[in-house]
Amino acid sequence: MNTTEQWKSISLIAMDMDMTLLNSKKEITAKSLKTLRRAADAGIHIVPASGRNLQGIDEKLLQIADYAILINGSMIVSLHPYKVLMLNTFSPEEGLSVYQFLRDRYPEAISVFIDGGSYMEEDQKQQLSRFVNAEMAAFYKKNRISVADIKAKILQAKYGINKVGLVLNEETQKDFRIHEDVSSLPPCVMVNSGGAYDISPKNTGKEPALRKLSELLHIPMEQVMAFGDAENDIDMIRTAGVGIAMANATEAVKKTADAVTLSNDQDGVAAAVERVLDLKMQKL
Image (tube, rainbow, N blue to C red):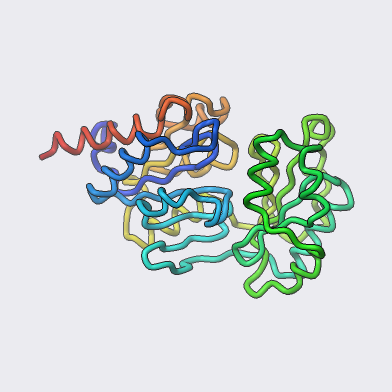
């Protein structure tokens, strides 16, 4: 199938959020929302694929999307009506061991995603400005639920621990050596997205989740388009029939992608989706 025919065949569009669909102000523009609405109205499945949980996804996007890949592929959910289609978690005991491993080595901002919610100890939440910029601190304060004793919260998990996330400041990132010392942890994967490190259960990822969702919907991967900018998007972009890197993506992502669109501050996702819609109109 040539490139034009492949773009015409797209039936599902998956997109990362931060620095991909969201601009640098962490907003979805009216233009992007309008374009995604047009795509949904044309019968294309719109799927956020993010390290965020459901509460971290813009409500306006959730009204357009019909499925979501959340917490770096730990969860797949149907949105209308809401239903969990897939869940991959650490047990509470495994999650606690990962949390303690990080807490002993890095006193920075640690988030724990428990039963789909995101939590942070109150003392760390109050010190966020030491580790992240003001914009990120505001995001974490808004989207992380404060708990006095996060270890107790972990052990009370009903469904499990989706991931444990660590945000490092620039100075600490220079000496970050966690990849060399994870043998004591439960089987896991770790991804880095601009200084945010997430440790998730083995076999977790946007790519396996996207593949699973495409199977559930009986959509060949050749008819899937995926957008991203960072390390945790690479496998998803490589596997999709059409993988798109943002202009602001890392070089590794660009080398993996089939095409590079405009940056996240130039509505790059919308630009590529508009091309899909224009090509589909040519078929009529």
